[in-house]
Image (cartoon, rainbow, N blue to C red):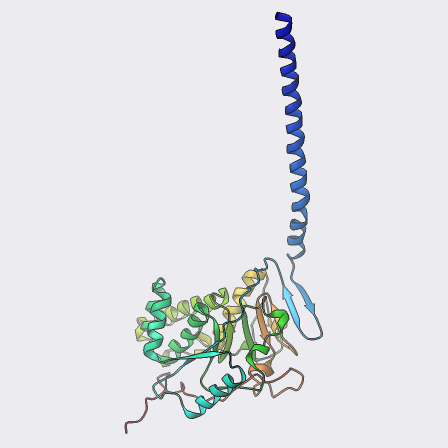
Length: 339
């Protein structure tokens, strides 16, 4: 009996040892399997750590890790406008109707001051800094500039100034098929100036026409930088935000306009790409160029007259007619004359 018990005891110990060895082998096997599958992923990241420029005959691309997941959704098919006290002119109506005739799937919305206020309250009630700044500003052009970025961040679509007309290319053809998922923001060059070794970004995107998918971090960077900028103006002049006057602002384009937008978009890209972009990255374009998820169109697309109507940059997509509705001494347009 003792002998039999001893035999079973040894058998049990042997069985336990075998099971332990098998478990050890399985664990080690899983480790190597996991490692073998994870290795390509690590290699992929290291390959993308340095920006890789890629050109084709029709386009240019710069990508870099980390690469955001492409947005499957298309650009929202909606055009946004802001109207001032004078309302929409017949010319502006004709501009809009032509755009919509070319692109019948698009809808549009025109916001007056009251509708714009309601919009900002609706979408940004959780951002008291945005609410405070927007409703404190008494210079209309500053509000109008900020509004376009807020709308494009919240819902996306296309912002167009009222004095912008479309060319003859339907809007859905503005972005090549190869970019429609990767691009989350579309801008066009207003000033396509060459690089100079002066640590200054000379290029400028237009702000009269901008396309975006919702929640672009680049748009939020523009918004946040504007909040900082207007606070700085108020501090320099020892006034509250509602005390800012047009005469206190050296250049509106730098504070809330296209230069501010350009600087902020590039700043956002710098952070993502982990390097400093300069004019060599975004100018001298003959075709569209994708920088991470920002599609930059050549000067002829949105600013042909500023670019002297080049013949080698593709079609004219829009024309800005410079109605100058914001260019009075108060930074806004006059109301309609009393009848």
